[in-house]
Image (tube, rainbow, N blue to C red; front, side):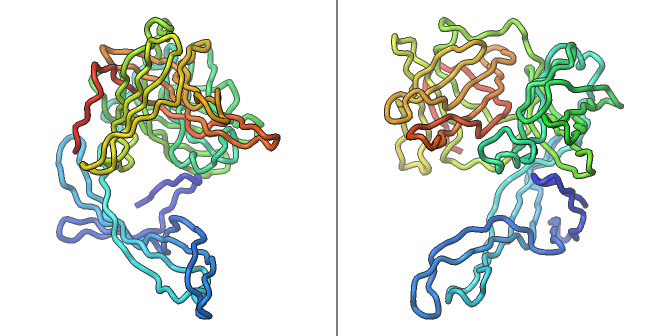
Length: 364
């Protein structure tokens, strides 16, 4: 077996076995999840901060729904330990967490020559070494680029504006170059399912020029060049959609959420999130304003010391019925060192939103 991770490393060192319908994957060495400093009780009785390391020991994969795309239950067996075993009296712990993922056959929907015309949104690997993001850990989720096959121009942070692309046995092969010219990234796009509208799920298998490899998932949507947000058509209630091709586990707490753009003089925004349990009331946030800036629909903070700071923007890609496909950028406020704040990109992804009549939740 082989897996790909956010650090552009393909790892083939794990063992796997099948027993009683369950695939068990065991890495050759425990796989690092995180390193954090937390307070603990030292042997001296004092409270100290010590480095805690979380590591995965094995994964257990069980198929729970069979279909064209299978649903897989993933049980992760992990342990926590202190970097210095003598630093704390607290013993290491081992626990099991459960999430779900999808299993599918790649290349179920091969690309055709017609797919290399016009502009298209596609995922790309956001290499932390290439820059473009305030938080390099975002790179683990990949990014979303706009490729114009007619002009050979690219819109992707940390990359040069030019790219090359060709069709190879039903796969789009595109070469992107780091902004400083120090590395190339060959993206091999494989399409495997459709939403029945205008979007397809794709995987990008990426090889960097030094041989490192990675994978990114997201949507492939052909851009409608005539689509544009205006102050007249933007107002409405937008219900978030699960990003096609992005199958990280989703908790009850944050999906779906609603962004309501009001057609009032102040262009206010009402965001509503579902509480973490059935007993919780939805969380409502009224601290944003919206505007149309060039070809972007933007949300900015309204009030406080960060008033006017950009928090989210949408580049319109395509629309089908009540569904709008966008390239969505998320921003975080960073202290500029001079008593103020500046907005820097923290997320760069493909997404879709459905225009709906009311804010209404259906709990899983």
